[in-house]
Length: 120
Image (cartoon, rainbow, N blue to C red; front, side, top):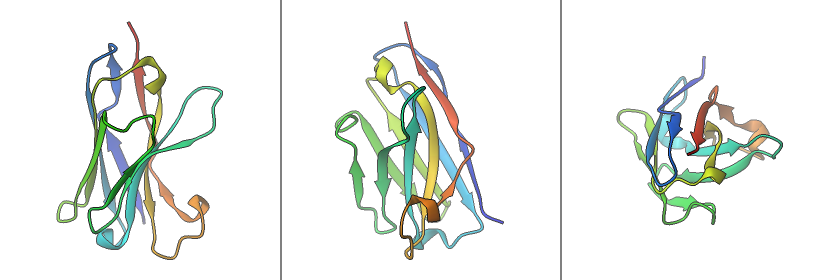
């Protein structure tokens, strides 16, 4: 079965850093675009960052310059390094795997989510 397992969430002060990691199993990892989405209380789920199997990243405007997404195809992992965190980054962060045949995020696989809280 497909499984995406996230780790690294927690509580951090504004200006601090966290690193989220996701390890995938049950998919041909190098064929999948991997990503991170987040959902804050009362908000829609939103894209944070994605990275293709060929290592091409893209970011939401709100995190550009602060977050870095990377992947290791050999280890089947995707990582989100989050620096200069602000309270607006508080959300549940979800690992995402999108197949080459995807039509929407409804076709994707998702992790269980990890809580990130940025607070003084």
